Length: 283
Image 1 (tube, helix red, strand yellow):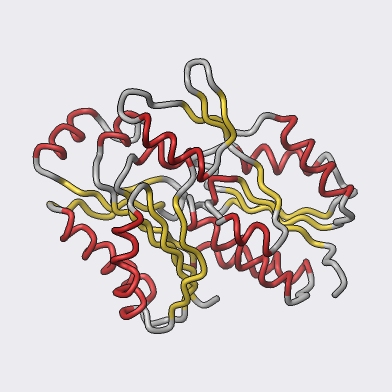
Image 2 (spheres, helix red, strand yellow):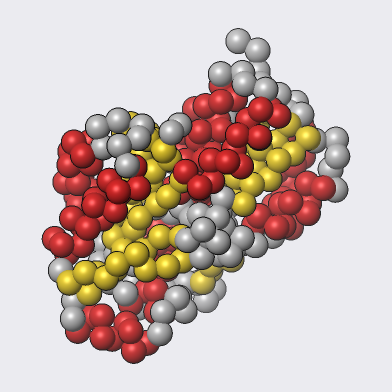
């Protein structure tokens, strides 16, 4: 089969599992994780180490440096690609989209389409997976790009979180809210709004009720439509596995295309005990 002229580029915050990166020959711009005297590239493997070092050590996250963008452009050209579809996490949460857009404008020899997914984690990743599947079907570049913009509102991710503490430390919520939430055993469900910013979907008392509400919101968003689904976790593999048969039962036209641990950069801001469900309706 002739190699496609189009490559899919994502940042690591899109949480596309490595198995799908390899399947579709995607390129990945990796965010960075820094401790006081240690610096790492974002990955699932690193996330496991991050959890082990909690709560005594909480590292900082940063975006790829400029050279990372230039290096991956050279790699794309050397491999013979002519078209690039870039899918990036929300511009409200990271500068990767805007940086990529500006840098690719400097390279007219590559036909590029850079998408602000207005989402995070696998909510962004499912858009990249959908685009990669279109490429594999030899759908023309221009047609994929035209449809992809319209798919942004079809994608959503809901995260059940076991603690508010790491959102507070990451500056996402105030200290008072975090303390009060901990005392009341509040379990938040968060997502991204239409502008691409974090918002609290619901706050629930107790883990069991929180996971039930998580599934409720997923079912409501799907609305009986066909959907690609992703089941992610943050140090909560057993909890995600327990939810899987229920998810398959309530989303009758759903297809689970990704299951994985979230990468380190998201783990740092959410802490252990996270279960996330990504949805792309009408795929």
